[in-house]
Amino acid sequence: MKIPLWRLAHARSGDKGDAVNCGVIAYRQEWYPVLQQYLTAERVKEHFAGICFGPVERYELPNLWALNFVLHNTLGGGGTVSLKLDSQGKTIASAMLLLELELPEEVVRQYGIPTQ
Image 1 (cartoon, rainbow, N blue to C red):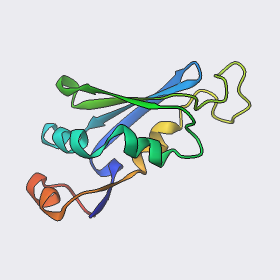
Image 2: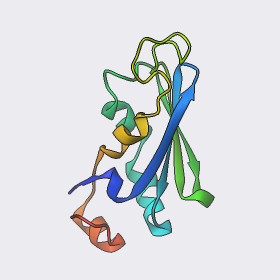
Image 3: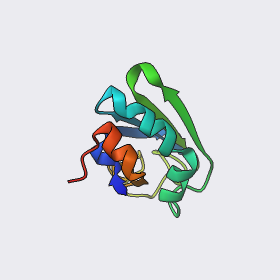
Image 4: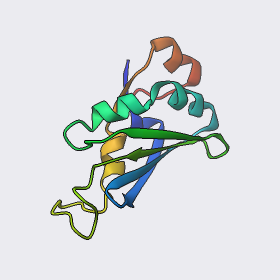
């Protein structure tokens, strides 16, 4: 089943030079393991193809039910030199929440993840 990330989590992003830092925080503690398993750095890199031209790093923060992603070479040089409309990466969080996770139906049922 394709489940948009916004059903499971909220996010916040900002610039770190030419990189974007994006935190994804599960709404419920029991949903954090789903994010750990299915929201990979590779999946995020795929979602931001054409925007993120460097590697994507993922950091786990289990005590916060959160994952933090650093998307390198994404801002066209950074806030002070970039010609991009979002030179500080503030809209990346909203774009991240549009990412669809491919979850097995039994995982959706087991964790009570809303589908509508």
